[in-house]
Length: 314
Ligand code: SF4
Image (spheres, rainbow, N blue to C red):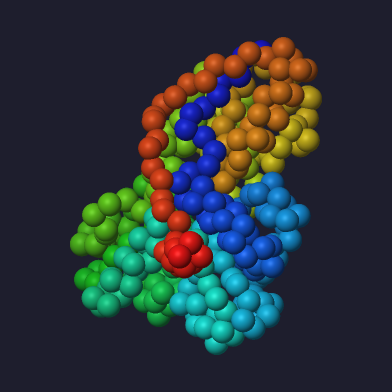
């Protein structure tokens, strides 16, 4: 058996920053820290921090007054920030800068009197945060059918934004539908779907035709990981999204000569290696890593944390 190991795969700059931020916060303050929602959508990562004593909450009201609260990589709405201020919480914002970029675009368009069509998945943390920036000025759509159901006048002042982790192809279809219905619709100069999402999807699109099976490491609630599995399926390959080697089924690998392995932007390399170890052990698999694009992106730690580091050092 041959393993085609996709590169780039796994952690993106935003996830690296958020995890490093939480690690450093624990180092400085101990583990009595609260995080609003999962720091990143990955079971392995969340379980590791939970074992260290970090508490993940779904509501600010669960955090005792005066505590330290981290915002996850997916960002939060202004309402959540206000609730944290009301409870006198000390906050550190680990929102990915590429998510913040979409928030700022939403604020700008709303201020300029546009109504925003946000392309994204209902209920996703990032979508909830972005919509919270201008709730009265944003309408969410997921599909071209949703676009067909819009009732804005032909000359309405409209702009569109997208969630950062969508399928590039599916988002393209929704954008085409929007542009043909509202040809004057405004959009930001640079794509909102982030570099990491795009690069991981390109790698699967390029390599899946060479494979009999696609294995994606990532959690079921990770949007960008699900998109990778869906690309494999759309190319006619059996594809599975798993958190780790324990979820693999031996029957998936019967009659498989080549398996493509990749990982969503929130999945750590350790779970990729677990799967490789399993396939080497059970099927004497050999690994060929194929790099479809180099990535050299990194983000600094949040400024609140850098200020705390500076204060501690002086
Ligand atoms: S997937 Fe993209 S937007 Fe999300 S955290 Fe990573 S770099 Fe940021």
